[in-house]
Image (cartoon, rainbow, N blue to C red; front, side, top):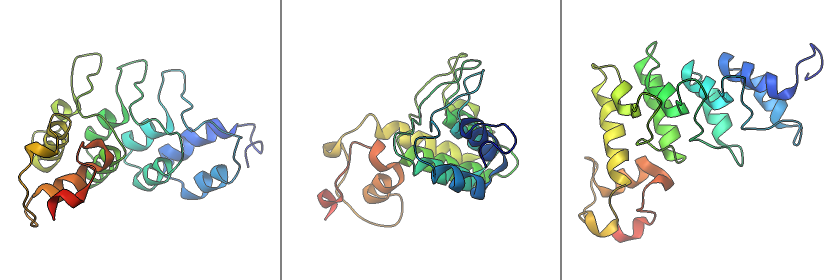
Length: 179
């Protein structure tokens, strides 16, 4: 598929992320060594930037499963990360939230600033409190360690839920401290 229209797998990777094309992505991923998962276009956007910008949830999931993907790369124009792009997706707030959760779970830094000194939380639509809360919790997770968290366990935003939400981005990697 890569050369059928003269496009390289790197170029197809960007297009597939924009279009949320699972088939094209799986085809590319079945050809190791023919693409760079962190390839960027002239303005520095990677496939992950495009998946986040266009609300391509399936593409984001597939991209984040790939080894060596860098989730905190900043583009050249705005110095936005994929998380900056995800929080600005307004067509479906639930998709923006899911992509942001995925990115944070895979290590996206919610405290990274863009060219305008804006963190992702500052770019969230004022009506999307759930997304704002997610980013706030993720940012706090970077500032605390296990000794700072109460040792309780429930389904209402407890420490174990907090760890699950933040994935490896949290300093709280072991759920055994909550038993």
